[in-house]
Image (cartoon, rainbow, N blue to C red):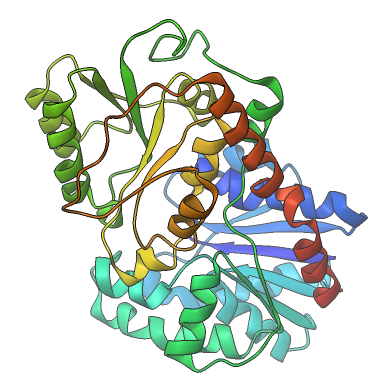
Length: 381
């Protein structure tokens, strides 16, 4: 038995792709039993538990101790889960979960721990203040140091993240695998089905329309760098009358202001995760524009694989994890440096869509990383 342990992660499309789909995939590789243990906020606990059970029926979903400054008290809940399941190892998502998992190893309740590193935690908290609490932010660096140095195996989402571990924390080991944020079940299905549009699509079939549709899928959180995105889009929309922009995001002050500035050419809508793949397939280019911060230099945005699976070339800013280099090396779109002009953007034809989908199928599905997943399982067995 191996536990996959998450702390204070709420259900979302990212959670399904990066957690529940991963648990299913790893379990299918060699029959190893893997159970998700999710400590979630007490607010809306029963709705959260239902949502997670819909994707992972065997998961143990427990209400975490209220207030994050008391996060260490959750050791009791994890110890209970370990006493019942007697796991050989724990895959822990993030630095807080890894600290708790390492305490279980110290108590003899598991033998090995894998740190699932989704990014540069201390840098992200310091750059974007995800929680406005100086005491908690100050804890991140030592927690990240301990997660890197004192785990038995490490999963990094980019080679850039491993370089960061070596440069900032002086880690010299080789016990790691790199698995970028790969496609979730819904988006992987679009490759084989060849989806173009659906009744829920926001734009018409690219083969029969004259507009060029740029799509931005995801939140507008701080690290998403909306001001930088705006500095790209405004000149593009002014110079290229055929361009339209679709935000698959919740309405906010930023995207609504752009919609007001370009009436009829900017659309904002929120879609269910299961509908996103089909909507993307009706667009022409995927937008992935972020400022040059340490958080973004080591990142592996989920939307990169999702755009390619939908057959969209990616318009990406420089210095996003390993992906900006990947775009250049494999002709997967355009890399934009602020202050440089882009060529006119054209509709994406069928042949190019097919090539981009094929790249996603070969390089960005979970099965493409079976060797790495097996290495984790072997390390924890």
